[in-house]
Length: 403
Image (cartoon, rainbow, N blue to C red; front, side, top):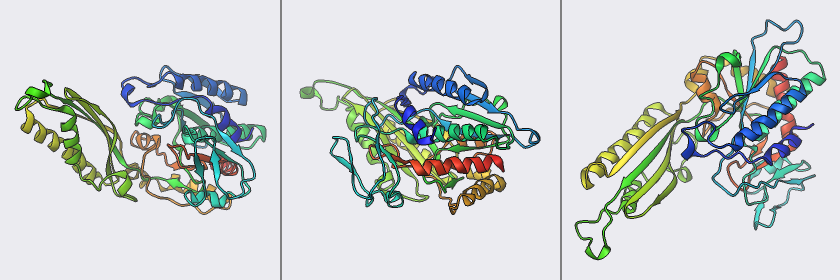
């Protein structure tokens, strides 16, 4: 089975994670559904010691082939969950064969996918494109990675290719910054690993954001508006004031490269109560600390103005820039680059304006760069995957494990 065929199978199983349920793992029960489907597929392919634990982590292993028992065990990781930021739970992929370079109509949504807006399509003329119907995400982040890892394992077994021990894990809740927190490294047993969770097949990513989540709870005083003078404290207006105290140009829509940002993800409120949810991102550790301190300073300022307890800020670190660790493991990055060159591509590395499970794992002692998947425009209705590039990623993984 091709990786793109597996993607279609797994995309149909909705697995959106939810930040508001982050205290439990997984944050949504649907992730268990996919976990058990994957476990069955792993057993069918021929992986051993396959299991799903109580937190929906899926483990499976390929023992080393004869004569390769002394090779360091290598890990491959992808995540089960998808974002729940756009659309509903019924995902209906479209398959466009022999792409002609023109605009692709996304179902009846009124949206179109075209190469002027998404330049990766210019390199995909004649290829098969998997898209959304314009009303949901596709879920290729990261079901494309899941599909490629399993397809690689199947080819490895069917073609009897030599390899050391391979350790597979599919993780829940990556999209809410939790992903690798409960991955059992002793059980996993890898000496180093790769997440398969990027875009272009020739990417090797080893530098991520530092990341935190910020939750604001604002308590107001609600009284009749006709008798409100010097009495009412309007929680929703205070929420707006908090946002105005943040740098207006330091938002995702106005930053790029290594520029950090504050991103308002969700807001709700009325006179008596209001909530704000942010993510905070920066590649530079010192600037990242300054961003979190600014949030704390705003909390003090608001409470000094309106009364202690009006605003309550909760900051939660999510992951750190894995470049701090991987700069000391250039061999792991170079192994991936050699595999990319082996399929005729030129490897590239860019600072990731996001994060992967590899960030947490690298700081937990498992060096773990990130590889591409052949999927693009992630987290929205224009998400798409290129089947031939997914085949290429599968070959890259084969070169990595064979090396």
